Structure formats: C-alpha cells, structure tokens
Image (cartoon, rainbow, N blue to C red; front, side):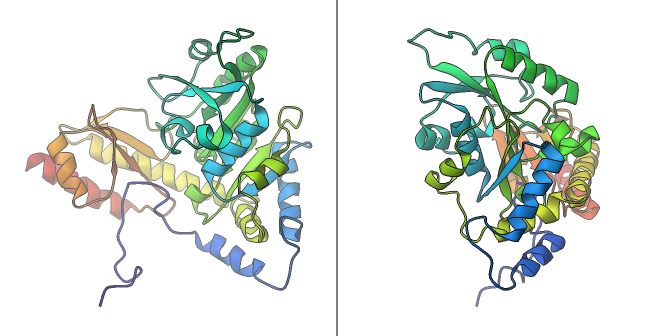
Length: 348
C-alpha cells in the first residue's frame, strides 16, 4: 500500500509552483462555492475583480482571468500584435525558453530574442533587435515583452522600467509585462503592483506562484493598444465557465495585502538562503538576489548528489548554474537543513 500524497510531505527549492495553496485562498474558494452564479465571468466575484483592476491599474483597466501563465502570455501577445508582427524579448524570457513554443504555435509569433547578462532588457539591448521597420523581408517588431521580476530573479527599478517602456513606445512598440512574479517585484521595490509594471500596455498578472491554485489573469492597462482579449481568451481555450473560482483567488491575493505578505516572506527566505549557502566555500552566487530566486554555481558532482536529496533544477547545463526558488511557505528550518546538506556535500 502506497502513502497518500499528504502522508509523506517533503520540501524543495525547485519552483515556487511546488508550494501548496495559501489557507486564505482556500477559504476564498470555499466561500465562492455557494449557490449559483452566472457562468463565463458574468458573476459577482468577477465584477468585484474588475473594480479592483480599475482601482489598482487605472480607470480604463480591464482584467481577464485565465487558467495559466502561458495562456495569459499567449492571449496578451496576440492582443498586441498584427499577423506580420513579432516580439522582442530577453533570451531567457519564459515565453521563449519555458513555454514549449506556445507563442509560436498558438499565436504564430516570431520572437526576436536578446542575450542579457541578468535577464533584463535595456534600451540599447532592445535596439539590437528592434529595427528593420518597413523592411518587408524582416518580421516587424511590434511588441517588447519583459518579465518582472526577470527569469534570473532580478527586478527592474520603477524608473528603469519606465525609461525602457518609453523607449519602446518611441519605437512604435507596445509593451507587455510578464508578471508571473510581479508581487515579488513590487515587494522588493516597495511599490504597488501597478508601479512595478510602469509603462505596460498589458500585463500577465500571476498569483499561482504566490499562494494561489489557478490564479492568473491578463490585465489590459491601455485598451487602445490591446484588442479583442475577450475573444482571444476563448479561441485560446482560456475562458473558464466557472470563473468565479479563479476570481475569488485573485481577489483573496490582490485585493488586500496577502500578495504582499507572501511575496515579502518568499523574498526574505531567498535572502537568507543566499546568505547561508553563499558562505560555503566552493559555492558562488551568480545573480543579485532581489526576489525569491537564488542562482549559484557549484561542482557538477555536488549538484548531482544534492539533487538526490533535494529537488531543484540545473538552470544552465553548460556552466553548471543552478536555481533555488523560495515560496510563500518556505521556512528558515528548510533553509538551514538545505544549507547543511550543501556544506556536507561540498566537504564530502
């Protein structure tokens, strides 16, 4: 007889998606599970979510709950582009490296990818691919997509992101912010969610990595730039019939301070992890720790032995760089246990 999934709990640093659902989000789902509500978003909770979006992101903002982050990105990018247009993004962007080609397959988009040292674009880096406007033989850049925080866990400062967005707009590009970890960015920057996405025309707002179950959305900040999101959500198979249960999660996370509490905790745990593991000889922290991710290099044989005990991913097979993610439920004990394992393996 095998153990049930909850009879042998374990902890890992592979992904903030590994963590469970925050109890307050679970309670919100249970409260929503009463009586009947109109389907496909015409329910009371989704109406409340629209009020939140306008309050947080501006009076013209609209929010569209979806099933997952890949779906949010695909719908958002389609809404910003014509059929002949393409997207400029960092080479490490989730839309390029981790979505199984969904933007290309589902949306038919060309991605112009830019190598970056820290996962972030700059105006100068954007210019390396945002060119050839009017040249019929080159897919026309139409959108700049950045991730806040980046796939390296680095955060764009508010002024930095605004300057980058202004430069993109001057080039005639729309701006998409992949906000799968926007809460972590806002927490580390000490600002609102909207301020952490300064200059965005459209945002993929993520809650699943910050304590939700299925809590993702497309936020249209500039309706003049994004068209047909309601139709694209349906054709992209992202329209939930029982949308109230997604809206309930988003409200529980974002229409209050739960997002901030969870993100602050995850960020603090990453700082503690970097401090503990970075002090071990032979371990090098490779990126500044600004959110809930720690990147490091260590000997390949040590990595293999550690992965037999603890779940985490090798980020770059060529360099041996690994990624350790902290979550809303990561504890100091988790970190001390892991750091002790690293120290033991390094000295073994």
